[in-house]
Image (cartoon, rainbow, N blue to C red; front, side):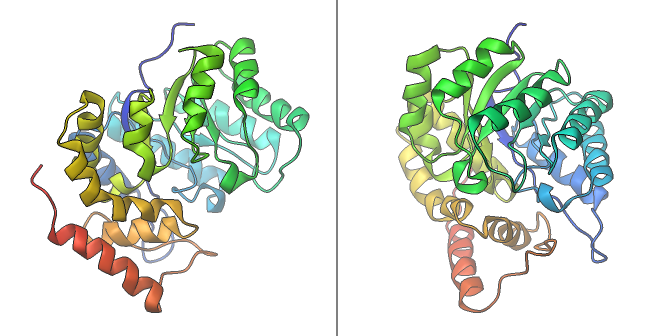
Length: 299
C-alpha cells in the first residue's frame, strides 16, 4: 500500500461542541471545521481525547463522522477509534470506512491497560477491520499504554495500512528512536502542542493540534515557519507557548474550549464528568488566554 499524504500539516484534534441541552451541536461543528480548513489546516481528527470521545455514544460518534465528511468536502477526516471493548472498536472502524473517512487514529481501549500481548491483539483487530490508512496513537500519560518503537515497528511490518504514529509521550527522543529503528516507514505526527517546533526539527511531518481550535491561523503559521526553519518562528513560538501549555494538563479540554469561547470560536460547554472551570483556576487560565489575545500577532 502506498503511503497516504493525509499525515502532513496541521490537523486539528477538533473539539466536540455541545448545545445548551447537552446534545452535539452539528451546525457549529460543521462551521468550526470549515473555519480551520480555510485557515490552512489539512484535515480533522474527531473523537479523540480533546473531542471527549469517551463520553460520546456510538451513534453520536458516527453522526459526527458524517457531519465532518460532508463539511470537509474531500479533505481527510481521521476519527479516533476507541471503545471499552474490541468488538465495539472494530464496529466503529467499519463505520468510519462506510461513511467516507480517509483514515483512522487507533487508540488503546478505554480503561483497560495491560500487557503488549493484549494491547497488540486489540489494535491489530482494529487495524485489520478495514483497509483505511491508520495512525497509532501513543499517549502513555492518558491511556497508561506506551507503544515503544519496537512495538510500532512490529505493527508496521505486519500491516501495510499502518502509516503513521501520533507521538504524545512528551519525550522528544522518541522521534529519533523510531527513525533509527524503521527510518521513514512511519510518518511521525506530534500530539503535544508545546513541543511542536522541536519535534519538526527532529523530523515530524504533522501536528495533531489542540489549541488550533481557538487559534487556527497562528497554529498554521507556526507549523509552516518551523518547517521552513524560519528565524521568525522564535517570536511566534514565544508568544504562543503559554497558551500551548494549556494543552498538556488534565483539564486541557476545558481550557481549550474556554479559549474558543474567548475568541468566539465555540462554547466552553463540556460533558460530565467534566465541569466548567471556576475560581482561581479559571481566572489564571483567562489571564493567559487574554494576554495572548491582547498581544496577538498579525498573521
